[in-house]
Image (tube, rainbow, N blue to C red):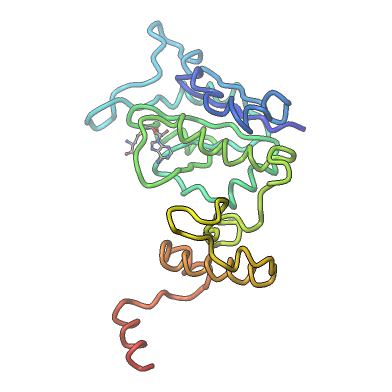
Length: 243
Ligand code: SAH
């Protein structure tokens, strides 16, 4: 069964785009996933084929019309989840990506302009997803990000490298740092433990590094992982003083 991606967009020529090369491109040619972009404008009903209009209440830019988007969505409706890319959505996580990759595919709605008439989200079952706390000019790049994350998890796409259980976020932690030959580069050597051949020591070192790096770089992830409150800076100082 192949993973079917239907993308509703004003720029269907952006797909598969970068997903046509490398792992995802090969998987596409092998039929492990399908890429079906749909031109939203084909569902416009007026003479000018308009898909947007000025914002109610005033302000800059244009807003995508609910009626046109609903017609486009209804034309592809099936059992697959419908996602809309929007900075107002729930942050995308590896857990959600894994869930989507296990399913039959997704329908993705890409916004443009100032966004989408809110009534669409009331009238249809649509999951709103964000790829980060920054603003893109359109949902297409965000859709490509989401699809790339899903496709690499599809059976047979990554081969032996597979979706390593150690990988960043799979354990709730960042991955440990990686090294490869040459053993010495610009006077820097690969940590001795990684050259020891002692698999237990290597595993312990990697776990410790994953924990330290997550704590220092992503206190938010660390807090969730530990299920504890990260001490405030003043709390940490007091703790140190008592030791
Ligand atoms: N005025 C909106 C931003 C519109 S950006 C706001 O401030 O919330 C235009 C389109 O780009 C959006 O409709 C959405 O589809 C896409 N987009 C922009 N940033 C995004 C993000 N962080 N995640 C997902 N989609 C995003």
